[in-house]
Length: 277
Ligand code: KMH
Ligand code: ZN
Image 1 (cartoon, rainbow, N blue to C red):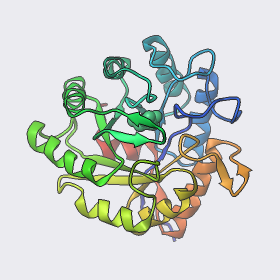
Image 2: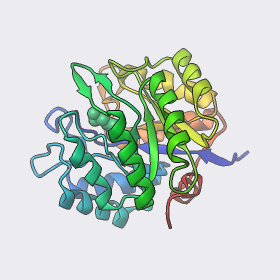
Image 3: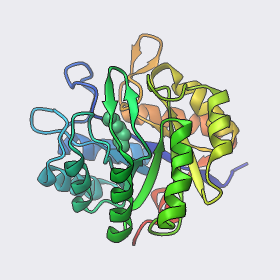
């Protein structure tokens, strides 16, 4: 029996934390990201969350490269293109605001500052407000990244103060298991979901590292969507390296089917998130 296509799978293929030398399968060039987008769409992804790398494979927010990567993904796939405004922990706030100049369909928007291992992922409240207003002006759909319960509460404050996002849908992503954020456990997921603003129209979750599977299973159990990819996990099982991002998408599709959920197409994702035509 077939089930409705009601599962959004977002692939986060690159991130800003892993070196190409440590994970050669990480897509770090326009050609590699284009191939990754094509393969992940074929495997069942609806959206791609993108961190761009420069010619030395290092994380960058260079405007020209961002535009080039967005074009490369759009040429090879129909995936909803979400650019990271989080960047790396070293990126200045002003440069993170400029990410929207590359005209993505969606952007990540983290709702507060988080300890990030030994580093700090800075998202001061005035920056969050400025980025949110910019996303409204530029007609870019934000995905609210929630690393802890305080950030879930901050999202309610943001929506109360500035009104709904562009498109009118409120889509959240619980990012769990970051050392410094909420743990990647079913209990923490249930607590966070209970606190989501009433205006929330969809939410998903991702668990970093070894919390990937517990978080994915908890999210499916609570009716949430999934984010997977080499930004978040580099092993497919204990000690076994991920071969490709598509492999992680395929596993997410299989988990979804166990929960009687079918992956939605990029067209379905566009409707769910109300990205601009
Ligand atoms: N790289 C992290 C410091 C996002 O993409 O918006 C931030 C991050 C969140 O990955
Ligand atoms: Zn990211």
